[in-house]
Image (cartoon, rainbow, N blue to C red; front, side, top):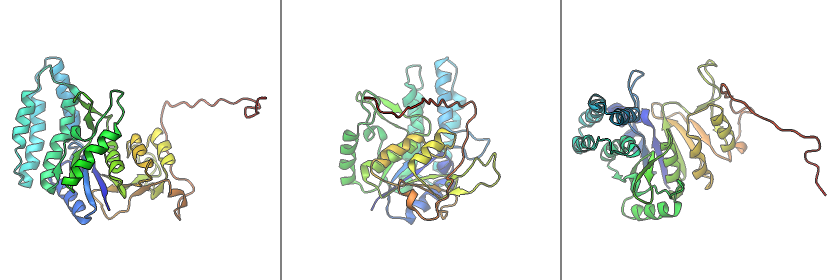
Length: 311
């Protein structure tokens, strides 16, 4: 039995959050495959590492010093490593990255370093084998996942190591260059890993206890959705519900692997289960959820005798 556990940026935003992740992983021996995002916000005034890396690239592109921004990035990683007593040479990795900050640096490579560095720290902390996503998640030149090559790489790894830590959000093209996913793409990485591992369940750990039936900024204390099917989730995603990346559905749906949205800060909460079997689970609400989007238009085309067969 294997579970994939993906932890988002808020779940790895500090040493304290790292400790919560470790407690969660160690509670269930089936959580053998762990995917992590880059360090996120520890509080509302904080910055996401990914945002800082994009800002670094913009400064370099316009020949503006990125030293101050990079120091903020360094401080985040060094603080976590120090507070957890990690021995990995994260300073060496940061020094190497800083030396690469020239106009020639590839934007996707630079931005992917957030997940890469977070993964290195988490791998040591959990005692898991670190797998650089560029050596596992493969794309073809059309920008689609090469599942055959990815599956083959996974099969070779799992024969040698039963517990893997994989950074999310990126993979590699046939020429070896880094290719990143759209924002929140770590969710997609987790789904791909669940697919190739034939996982029992794909756990997506975030900072909320599942998906809510309505936007809490509009509706006071909305209920949590306990079960939802893939089609319903996709509709809600299009209309603004954004707990899970909408593209994370496809890799697991193909193999009927359920997704469970869980809260790192409240792990005992069952969260939301996403499965095409959700429609047969007892006590499912008649209305699954309500979502909306501003400046959104839907065009409906109707025609008299539309369904009449032609001779």
